[in-house]
Length: 316
Image (cartoon, rainbow, N blue to C red; front, side):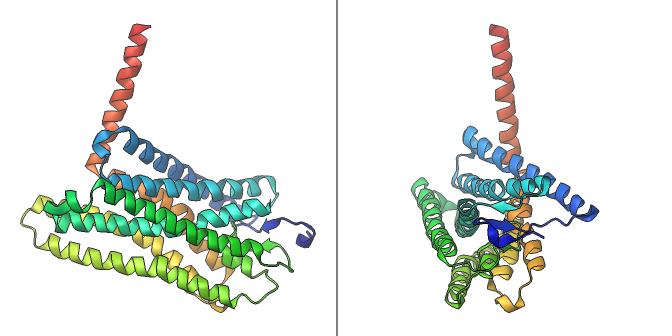
């Protein structure tokens, strides 16, 4: 039997069981990871390359895709390595990096609020949109989201890496989740658990309430629209955003708002799959397959690349 106390590193017990079901889940996670990585990277590059998508809405979306890339690139490759090679250890620094990027989810929550505000102004006050959502305002919303999310993330990660661990270093999770790490501490962490509750309320519950209120006004404005085409487009945009919000906020908030006595490692790991793998995979699919502007931009970029390639071949 492995003695997890002999190593200064942490041990991640992982998500996959040594069985056929575990192998199936592993393959499924890898496929979701590849779809998420390719989809989010494509969205970032597409928005960067096509000038028609240089608008606040798509600039915010590119930041959302960038954060999702950080999520999956920090967690899934290490999880895959552990499963394939059997070495479940993760260094102290590596654990801190995972904790930082996971708790950076506060920045994603604030970005989703900014996107909701963008759609609220675009649908409810279309004539005032250029003034209310200017380039400067967009940059301020993105910068503010990153700064506030980073401050929150640094605080949680610093605390997790500085508390004394006097029990086994085996974390019953597939990444360095701070609440899972706290179960290994040899000190009373009730103050920090209260801080987690407050932080979750500020970065998840409050933004969710703001988003719900904004979309309440949007749905009312859409209902009063005379144009059937306008209503269809507005409903499509709103439903896409609400789908993303639901898959992200609900599992995240449910996980971190519960007291330790009501949590179980198996349930926490299952819920974590939603906001670390499934949501990053769904974001580009929802925003691209349902969006004519993104499809048009993709055709233009492909045409431009093919044209340049043909022109280069002709000259050579």
